[in-house]
Image 1 (tube, rainbow, N blue to C red):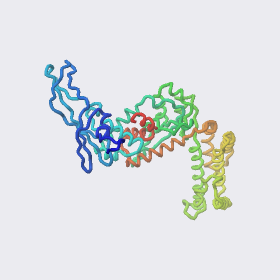
Image 2 (image 1 turned 120 degrees about the vertical axis):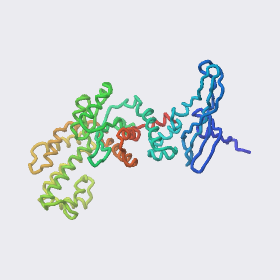
Image 3 (image 1 turned 90 degrees about the horizontal axis):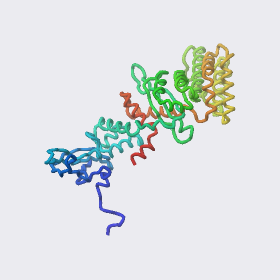
Image 4 (image 1 turned 120 degrees about the horizontal axis):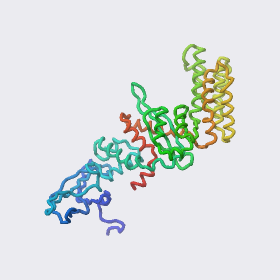
Length: 436
């Protein structure tokens, strides 16, 4: 006796053909693919002009890639009935728009599968095309158009954005130089603790006019809702934000501030190295051996590293490196304070120290001081707004680098922008809700 929990096999339900309004009438299996013959479940032989019942005039075959099951790609052989109305002398065939787009090569179920594979499972387009047994261009065009229609062109995608991050990103390396884009990130979920950051948009170029133009295209109501803009030290982003969203507070995040100090420390170390030896550092040179230790936070130094620095700074020739290293460590200490008021006080004291009265020999510290004095309000604003950093922006840049590596590079910027939005646009929950 058959177990009561089992029923007879139903290929239509198993292959999710009932969701498309079609029934399976036959199947052909080969080691590398499955072909299912099907027809519309509810034929409509009635003439929409006069209401008379039409006469069947054969069928037309339509081949469609369907959602794969197991290791075999699945193809539908859809038999589309043709009809003729004798009173009207009209010919037509069954409407298959529920199954697939007109002249499309993929069923709507296949489009949903491919979009999930691209957005949720992070598969490459090549792998998606292999799973559907279609050409790369067929899969790429269909999936990107569906992703743009269903997700990217959603008018509610920009709703609820109160904190944004802006940064530059290299999308292609060429012999003539790198090609850049400006990326805009929604940081509100990070600040509110509701989720990760997401990519809002990507614009060709990196300049004040690029970011300013993007902001100008946004509705005035949306711009009025932006409270904070996190950015790096590029003054163009600062000026564009001040002109288009003057009520927003600019925040220069810790990553870029500390990187400025780190670059000053490295430049000073190389200069002193060259002054002493007249050449670049070698593996046995004290300054070169300590290059990584100099960037380690004081609270994280091991006893061996502490001893190495003490030996290094005991030489009077390295006094300029020691002074620059002290400024770097003070900035790191300020950012690591749990008490934000204390951290802000320590950072303000660093800015005051390097802004005036620095000896002329400390060229790198003087340059750093000019930058910090100019952007002091943006640097200190971080301590008044917890969880407001451009760090998540750098994380998304890393995800886009991985995307570019998986695809072995991109040539078409429009294609790259669409793929980037699908990859890092935070569409996973939305996609699950729409395609469940």
